[in-house]
Length: 122
Image (cartoon, rainbow, N blue to C red; front, side, top):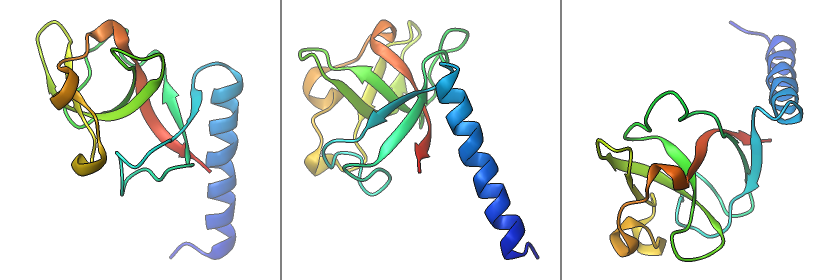
């Protein structure tokens, strides 16, 4: 059984690691807007994403990614539902009633996938 002191120390270490990764440029920070990823991600929460996650491998079905919106200047956070051989991804929100996603704008090319969400920033 982990006691409360150990649990608090572990949480502090995880937070310190996230901050270090952010400072070293290994992660980028983004605020969630909208409710398309409910219940996983709440509007106003901040996430960290790894901009280098897909330099050596393709996204995987189930990954949550940050991508450039295909027709607007904003960034979007969506889940990978399907990956083609060229790395293009069909992205969907976890809350389909509140999500504008690949069902509306089609596949997103790999060069518009900015990174993989790795954690919430607490």
